[in-house]
Image 1 (cartoon, rainbow, N blue to C red):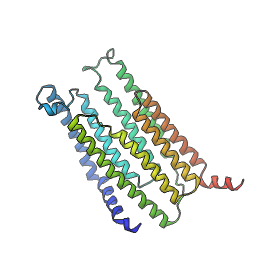
Image 2: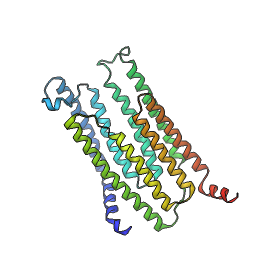
Image 3: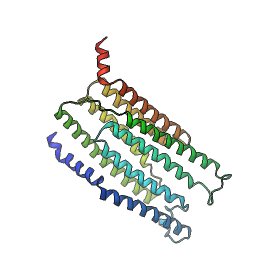
Image 4: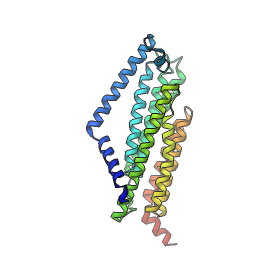
Length: 288
């Protein structure tokens, strides 16, 4: 693993830069600027002030600026998720649910673009129901996350310091690889949006990539933690990621239901693997 140390050092630099307070402040200012510029661009398009090429990809509903700002926020959250993979699988799983909750909230804001200006309940009943469903599902996932984080306990799978170091370095390499994939998907979707006007499916693609990344992490875990308890726990988290991916591609109402089920599944898995610790499982098996 020593030969990969320059790459892990590069990841550490990226991680430090991303979580630095100055970076966080700049990102916050950037989001504010994106939102304001989005509102201005939409109004300019409504007034016919934009060139035809730009007007073709600029919406005319002011609520789309909210969707744009939230989408940018979610992209940044995905970046944070990539950085947390090097910490622990449980923490990265929690981050995935945080992003899912924010995506559901974004879906609520997205429904605003389907509503009339001004909003009229008689004409906008279905979008209102979508907002209620997505918002309630996001709140439910938030509550599940609170219990999820409270249940987490150190499992002590790896006790040897050198093995722990190799395991962490391997996860950093995977995170660095995901960072490169993240940049590639973002650039590709951006180019396709500008050149063809095609709606990007960034988050759906990212969660598909995360499924494969989680499977890779399970295989890596098998190398460092061959015990049944660790393999079962981490494989179960992959199933939770799969449910989240299904939720992202599901139609309204179903996306909320599948998202809630994914949160409940992860919560039940965490409760089971915490209550039945590795030592209790091993002792029970030896007693047979």
